[in-house]
Every structure is written in structure tokens, then in C-alpha cells.
Image (tube, rainbow, N blue to C red; front, side, top):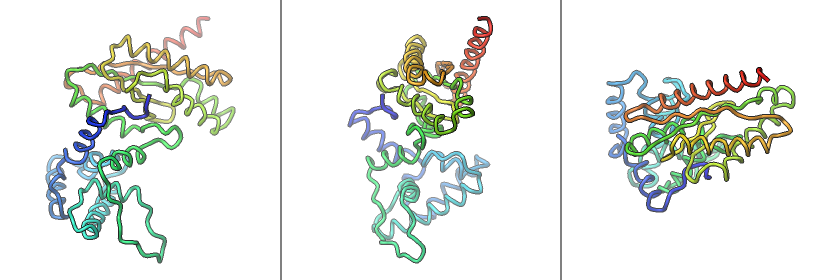
Amino acid sequence: MSMLAPMSPSQSATDSWQLIHDDPFVRATNSQDVERVVMAVAARSATPYMELLRSLVGVDDLTETQARSFFRAVVGHQSAMAAALHRPVHVRVAALDLLTTKPPKAGARSDGHPIVVTPSLLEKAFEVATADGVTGLPQRAQFMNLLRHELRQRKRHRICVAFIDLDGFKRVNDVHGHARGDTVLRALAQSARGSLREGDVLARIGGDEFAVLLLDASPVEADAALRRLRDRFEALTAPLGTSFSSGVAVAVTGELAERVVTRADEAMYRQKRARAASLRAL
């Protein structure tokens, strides 16, 4: 199981091409073009800069003021890159270059040679920039973007989303410390290898909350994958007595990604309450 859904070379090339070109900035080669796109989004949204950054690089945890400031820095960086390379530069390329390139130290001169981001490097940079620092898994923004993409592209295919909440994680942090808690989080990521199906995507979307995207899976297959994952996770963390509760939702045609995740979350809480009641009855 890969942290990101594995792709064949032809599929990877196609998705990378779409990642670069399938957006309103495809012909925005200068600041005036970019401003026209911003104005078009502002006409229908109260938070245009947040929407644009979400579509460009998956960032969705900034205020609109912060997003505006960062976006303006991206536009300036786009102009600088275009001047250095003597060719137009896509806004997303400039945004990722700005995110992944360390600024020069105070008083030092830039070498004037920005990174040239190819489709394959763009895909890798996007993965690294959005990976969780503890587990290496995709984070919420990347997971939601991927789910939205699949809901648009795979309308005739079944899409299952599983929501996972760790049981006993707070106790591990309180009793053994946060370093041991981090090992529990990493254990879940490790457990996914060999227990989830090839192509399933596990992401960390909160402190001790995870989500799994299962494509072309029936609810029975999704439940089986989660049982394998739980068994492996409980074996790895047996001395700490941790487990997890999970819930599955099957996307319906036209459903928003946020609603699918909410339904999976609700299903998880039903399972958590049922397990708690069962333990109290013992």
C-alpha cells in the first residue's frame, strides 16, 4: 500500500498534466491575467484567495488575509521566475517553488536560478509539501482534494470512505508521553502496508483521526480491509492496549466530498458507542 495511490506511467503523466493545466490559470502568464482570475473568483466567493490556494497547492488552513498575503507573494515570485527563465511560468509552479525553496540568508544574494518544476517533480513536491510530519501520510487537504477528484472522475465507480478514530490514544499520551504517542500514530501508517488493498489511500486528517479512500470497493471489502488494518495495528501496539473505531460511507452520485467524510465519521461514532456499550456489559 502506498501513501499515495500508485499510478501507471501513463496515468501518472495524465494526472500530472491535468494537475498543471486543468485550472483557471492555464493561460495566466502575467500579473494582469492572474488578477482577472482573482476577480472572477471574487465575484462568486467571499474568500477568493483561500479558494485559489486550495485549488493550487491544497492549502486550506489560512485566514483570507493570510491567503491574500501569500498569494501576492506567489504572483511576485511568478514574475521573478518568468524573468529568470525567459518564458511564462504557471502560477502553481511558482507557488510550489516558493513553498519548497528556502529563502536566502539575510545579506546573501540569490543565485537567480529558480527551480524548474517538471510534471514529475511537481507531483513529488506536492506530495512532500502536504505530507504529515509524524506519519508521512497525506494530510486532510490532500485527502479531500483527492476525494473530490475521484468523485468528479469516477462517477460510475463505487467510492468508499472510512473514518478512523484511535481508541486509547489520549491515555498513551497522558501516561507515556507524546513521543510514545507518535509511535502509535506511526504504527497505524506501518500497519496499512500489507493490510489495505493496493491503491487504497490512508491519510491523517486530525490529531488521532485518519481516513481511508477505497476505490471500487464494496462495503464488505472495505470492512474486511479495516479488520485487517485493526488486527495489524493492535498487534504492533499490544503493550499499550490501543485499537481504533471506524465507520464506512459509500459515496452517492453528486455527493460532496465533505458530506461523504461526515457520514463516515457518523458511522464511526456509532461503532465507537456500540463497542463502549459492549465493554460495559462485560
